[in-house]
Amino acid sequence: MICKLFIFIVFACLSSSALAAGDARDARPNAAEIVAASTDTPTPGANGVVFQALALLGVHYRHGGRVAATGFDCSGLVRHVFLEAQGMALPDTSREMSRVGEKIGRESMQPGDLVFYNTLQRAFSHVGIYLGDNRFIHAPSTGSEVRIENMNSPYWATRFNGARRILATPSAR
Image: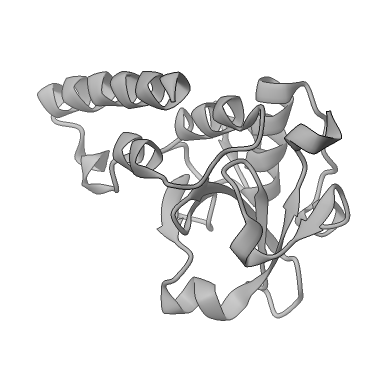
């Protein structure tokens, strides 16, 4: 709960300073409100993963991108977030990531879990990080930026391939 409050305060401050500067990106969903309002219980370590991912909102998409300065593709974003937040080196591609950790059902997802989609007419061609309340963060495609999406939107709902838990659960400790 304290971590959610911290994330809310940090992003509220970032949002208000961005508004003062006239940043056009503030039309996107308020990340702090999404996380603070989430009713999903995060896995241990998930707050660090979620916070790290939210800090990258607005970074440009770049095919094969692995660093914030030049941009991310979907797997580059996820790999970077887990390396920075948890010291975990995940595989390079979304397909390889889909084989790591524990397979979980949609009803069991918790913040910090990986979510996979078929966006290129092949399974597990896209990956994002679940934030809670049917929202995930990802680097979508050329010409876009890291952003938050609703998993229930028709586009994402029809392309969902599954989810994996990478972070340890309390019973696995």
